[in-house]
Length: 537
Image (tube, rainbow, N blue to C red; front, top):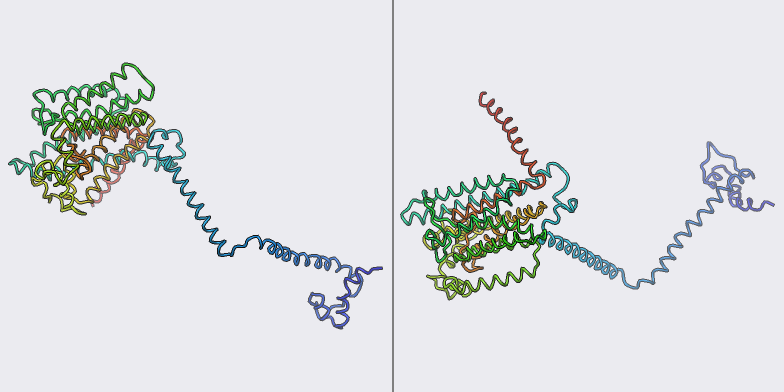
């Protein structure tokens, strides 16, 4: 008996039989009628053909109905697990996400600060070890050539701008002070301009020297400068404000040999630090350190404590990158502070300056407290944008050292806070160039010498600015490249020439600099004929 098929098609046959028309049977079967009508399919063959399709339809529909039921059942089963309201759950999730974000930021900044600390403590370690991780070594010939010459041009432009700024300020002050004494300001400024020209030419010449030339001449330069410094104890030595640190040179005037000792120390310390890192211990090394000590003692014998402090900064800058241990720095620093205190107590003038710095309200306004007060008044008068170039009031005899130690105060009065910030930014650019040279060179000599010169120029600028603003007692330290002083200007420019030579030998710098004149000549070869043709027309 075929009960299965009959029962499967029983409802459909009853509907078609009761309707009595092909249209109703077509509508009941779910298919439209073809033409005017269709024969009712009541045979067993039609039922057998439609049986698999109907079975598939009836098998699939219950599965679709069971899936939402199972999902709703699972949701109802999971619902009792969280008893918190939806609002509280959202707030808790947001708080956890914020806490996770803060933790990630904290860890990222901690790693970044640790990486920066490692770079500052030993700046040459990353020069050749991991070139792929640095931002400055991305591919591209234009970018590589631009970054290779960045140090050279940034250092050169910053130096020339500061030198020009200094010439303007020196002439601004001398136009009043020299004229008040009955002299010719232009003649006196022309003498100082000769020192600037000689120093600039020396800077350009030294920048073209090969790197192997500096270690060879450093010992000769140190011996000559020590010999020149010993001349201050002879009859040609000149005593200025209790410091015997100048010599009288016929046709030139006074010269300060201790300024050239700074350059010699920087060059010699590069060799000594190289030997120290190479674990070299012999009599030559001991003789080299003895020469450094003798150079500092000769300056100290002239009672020029400010220059001694700068020389100590040069030695400390070289030893820091040489890997000297911190406890040695602490010990030598404590010893230096004791020596400074003893030297200050032995001199009545220095003792009075330190007391006036500690208690400025009780200082004699016509004595040791005179110049610090007028320096602060000059900075306060300048305001934001200054009173204008050449319009300073304090340079009219109120500041006795307006063109040397306190030229930063006159600069702040004439150009205001904006002008002082520009000068500070230029010195910061020089310091940044020194750090970049140290990062991009692998030679220990270059790194140590650059660190010594950077500590000298930037450290001396910071000391001068701190003295003018009252953060330090008066030490008699001029502002590099800005203050008046022929030998000081020449020595700083020669040191900048050494840095430029190091910058020229950075990776890729020589190739980029050698192509620059050719590009300039090609540009001029195109521009000049065009102008000639335009003129002929």
